[in-house]
Length: 148
Image (tube, rainbow, N blue to C red; front, side, top):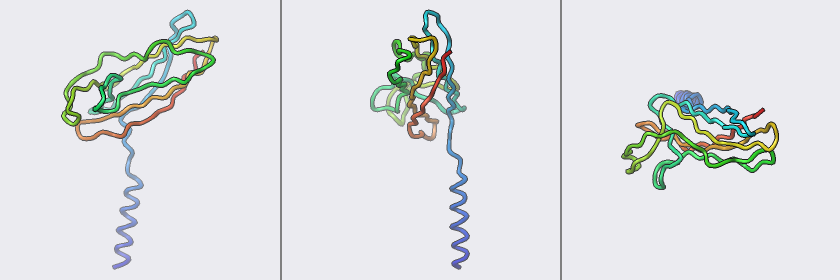
């Protein structure tokens, strides 16, 4: 009997170790030259079907909104706020409020003014993703874009 219980325990443990971590959002980064030593940093979220990422404009009391943070740098300055396209807005029962979000993909953009001809732009983004059955905990992602 002990051997049977031990075997079942090991099987359950191995099953848990092989469980997949959900990653319904993949991030990619690029830049576009604007001229006059300005560039647009592009932060693209590719979102699996059925999932969504929240806008930067979600009100308090709802899901965690997407935020971008750029630390101070000697090689560039951040110009204005991070911009986003028009989101989908609808009432989500779980939060009991209207929320704005993106499905499939979204590109956030941040203008940067270079102090030199090139720079390594670093930042951190925080986002939360949900589908119609569950929400995943907010995730912090560090990123780097080499601007040349």
